Length: 296
Image (cartoon, rainbow, N blue to C red; front, side, top):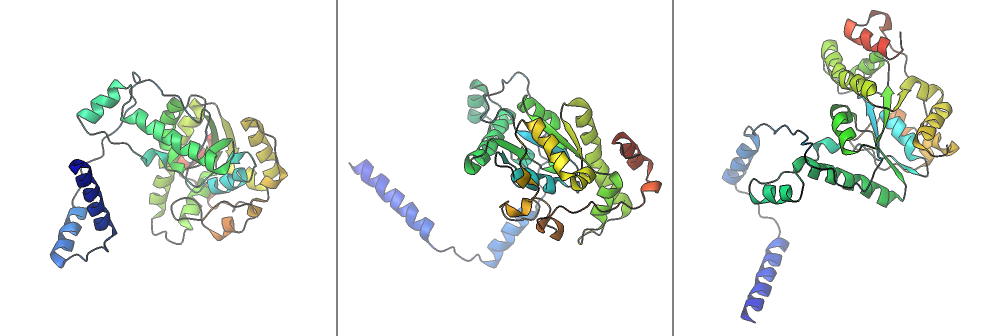
């Protein structure tokens, strides 16, 4: 009985501590915290897939991943898809940076004994996040449009062998011009091109290696009914005219770093793609992708 009472008193003490108002830090304490926060961190360990670790059963067997560069119209695409009664296309989920860390020793050995490592545990966690989107929305198909998907397309394909892929292209000059026109842009033209090319290379590699549906932003804005009909056919659902009127549907808040927040996208209306400048004087690298994507 004494042990039980001690346990109750301890929980009560912890509860009182949790309910106390936060104490103000002294200047020396605050300084120590700032120094610790600014100290260089150890490099993040590169994770590789261990093909000896089995793939666990997935709650979402066939998610849909948009493979696209930044500034390619992926937010518009997600708004149109999310306007379908059976498709959930949330804000960018950034799954590749949702990580699991196993402490060396007991945790690592325990999970390996259960047929799991950090990478497969992350896949299980990512799968659960996708499943939660479906549960909350009451829909059947989930689409993730995070531009960072281009950097982990091989892993996504491995984790979900039945996944479907939408490759969204935009004229390379259109991507660079869109980066250039951002209010916060201070980068040089060469730096913007380098940033775009960082996405173009894995995007093209994924498009060549995977089965999927290739879309062009310019066609999506010019012929939204035709293009969304093609997407619905690929995903195995009937097309719904209400998809085009995406402004009539609730898509959640516009949050920084989770998709486009421009007045254009907030208008709720599909607007024509901005004409690209300098298309005749592209750098060799951009010209190569423009040719490969059928723009030249």
